Amino acid sequence: MKLRIGWILGGLIAFLVFVIAYMPAIHVVGRLDLPKGVSINKVSGTIWSGKAQTLVVNGLPINNLKWSISPWSLFTGTLAGDITAGNIRNTDDIAFSGSLSTSLFNFNVLDAENVVVYLPVDRVLAQVKLPLPVNAGGRFKVNIQELAIGQTCQTLSGTGDWLNATVAGTQGPIDFGTYSAKLRCEGDDIGISVSEPNLLGLSVDAIVAMNLKRINVEGKFKPDESLPEEVHQASRFFGQPDANGYIAVKL
Image (spheres, rainbow, N blue to C red):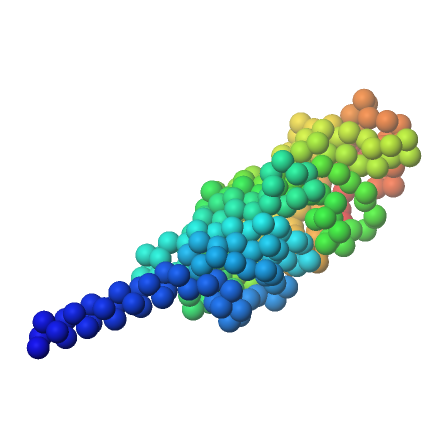
């Protein structure tokens, strides 16, 4: 009798493992309480290894999302795995790779490690309220060593680059080169610090709200002599240069 009960229990456990292992992701994703501003479309595969055609975060579409989740992470009360998205070779695509985890009891909390993100500049700027309209090109590249966010920024260590920065001029796009920044948490928001050298002679510290709806900037810049005259003329809208040729910026 005991042997028979053991076989029955073993069979039930094997059945449950099989069901969970091959459970379609669409049935699980459809029941998730996703954060505000986040939606996911055309999900396929299983909950452990699947993909979605599009993930939209605060109006930014992320295509070809794929995930591989470790079932062992469930024993620690988390959902953890490796995520990839987009096409790194397509400059118009948002591309992503890295390891993410979230609490099974609060999907509004996200942790990340060793993440690389590529963002088209024009799409990002379309989400930010700027004091002056800017038609810019290039890509933002973000390297994140460690990140913990919820409704606020809790932990952030990483760097960011504006690659092949261009801004529309009267005679066509103006090449501004590349800019590098350090990322951090600044209170509840994200802090971004840019330092020279760069063609704009830019040193600036920016504080960006988590929803990208608010940005405060303070710093200075001094356009390189190699930049077109229209750049030097436009810089005067920010004020007059100081004794060292720098113009203060505060937005």
